[in-house]
Structures are given as C-alpha cells and as structure tokens.
Image 1 (cartoon, rainbow, N blue to C red):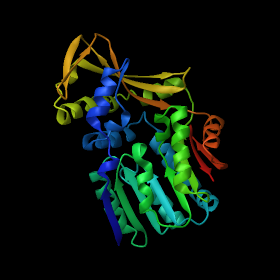
Image 2 (image 1 turned 30 degrees about the vertical axis):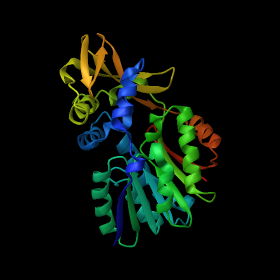
Image 3 (image 1 turned 90 degrees about the vertical axis):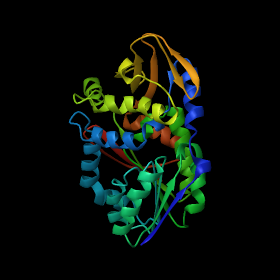
Length: 313
C-alpha cells in the first residue's frame, strides 16, 4: 500500500475572517464550504439518502450504466485528481475502470478525508494514494507538488460546480485546466434544469435533514467561534429562483436579535436572511459554454434523470 496524508495549513480556510466579513456585508452570507465540519459531513450523507434528493442516486445510476463508455472515452490515465473528495466513494468506480497509478484527493475536512482515503488505499494497493487536507478553492495550485507525471484526469462529480456563480465556475474550471495540463481531461457532473417543484422538494425534505444541515452551520460557529446563536430563532428556507436558474438556501432570523460571534456583535433584524448556499442548475449547452470559455473542449455527454456527466479534453 502507498498512502500519504498531508495537511496543508497554508492552504486552509480562515473561518473567523470569512464569517465576520460575510456577516458584516449586506445582504449577510456565509460561504457554503463551512457546512462541512464532521457533523455537516454526516448530515450531507443523510441528505443524499432522502427520497426527495435524487441527485446522488441518479448520478450513481448514470455512472454504473455508462461506466464502460466513459472509461473508453477517457482512455489511459496516470493520475486522477478529485477536489472535494469527501468520503472517497464516487471515485472507486473510476479506479476500477481506468486503473491509474496515482490518486490525489483534496478536501477541506482533512481528518475525515484521511480516514476515507486510507481505507481506500488498503483496497487499491496498486494505486499511490495522496490525501491533501486543504481548501482547494483558495489554494488549488498547492496540490501541484504532490502530482506525479503523466496524463491527468480531474474528476469533479456531484454537481458541486453549481455552488459557484457562472463566472466563478469558469475561473475554477480554468484552474482545473492548468492543474490537469495540456493533455489532461475533466470529468464533471452537474444537475440539469427541471421541474421547479421537484427542485424545491429536494432542498426541503420532509424529514428536515437539509434544515438540520443548514442550521448546523450556526452550531459550528457556536463551537468554533464562541458564538451564541439560538438555533431556535433561525429558520431554514430554500427555494428555486427560475430567473437566476438556481436554488437559494438561507437562514432567516425569526426575531430582531443581536448575536456575539468571535467577540463581535452582529445584529439581525426580524426576517433578515443569511445566504448560505446557491446551487445553479444548467442546460447541457449552458454548461458547455462555461467550460469552453475556461479552455476545455467537449468530448462526450451522458444524461440520465435530470443529471449530466460531461467529459472534456
């Protein structure tokens, strides 16, 4: 087995600075990357199991149905790079299909990533596995020294690209292009535009798991920034904005209140929102235009049940 975990403190987020800046802005916001502490990771896994949230199941079914075609279109690959790898489950199918010599996984939640990648390395003894604890959105280029030579594939599944504005998505895809190199490829998943009622239900599940996931962000601030949010005085609110083509997720203050966060006082008016996430939905051609603007060329597209996977070179 070949496995290494490297925590890159210089490439980590600054929770205090980002949160205080976001809460001082108008409208208030907190970057969605801060959902994913240990509790948030568990809650997101639970979201994926909810009947209303079909995205994860649809993506898995698509990959299973078309894996042979996808592998043939990719061809020989020496290194797979997966930003935001989380529990390292999704990449296993690709490892079985294209047999790279190296896998490099990146995630802001370093300890869970190390545990998941270490277990994967035990199963795939012929693959050199490197796990990098880092905020790849901030410091993607810090992964470069850990990459072997040869042909690279950046794998970005799960519609995470939808959390960025189209301009931000294009900028991130351009950075993926540089990381992959001239001969590199990109395999990316994203959610397609569909019935707004279906989209609304996906982010407002009956069991309240998405609400708990959203509110856990405030619980994290209580734990890590000595904040005193009363979670009972905030309400999860998510809706599909058809003009913008995105889900918006908010935490709404149910009363006028002042909260202490990292020694600072933050006032919330009755009904005021903290914008915690966007999730853009695309038509296939809309996303292709973004990818092409970032220096990628389309190779092939697979679609199933309102979800798409596209390969670029």
